[in-house]
Amino acid sequence: MGSSEYHISLTCATQRNEIGIEVYIDNNKNIYDTFYNNKDIIEEKTGLKYKWQRLNNKKACRIKAINKCNVEEQEKWEDAFKWFCENALRTKREFNKVFNK
Image (cartoon, rainbow, N blue to C red; front, side, top):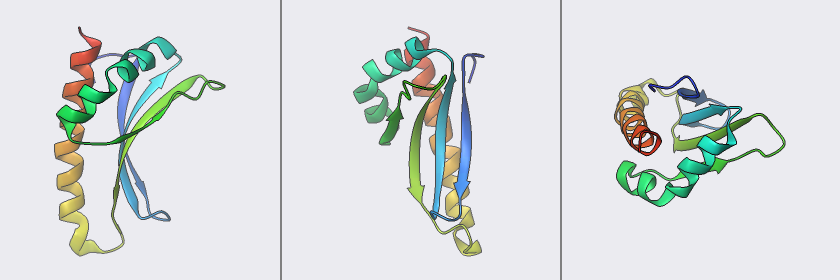
């Protein structure tokens, strides 16, 4: 995403029938707090609702958007990939705007 302090991951959880876009912040609660303090604008600009997980007792923090999707149904793969592409780019753009203020 342009910084070694956080990165984006695309996830697929077949058991929960969901795909996700996750911002993973390794060992820097200050970056998480900066993002969280801009939560409303990030969610407004991306059009996504994120699960904000500061994980106080752990090193890493996670911020994740989830889309319900049965990935075992191949006819839904195109929609899933489209969701990944569009929303990963939006996530990257808006989080980087906040980080680079």
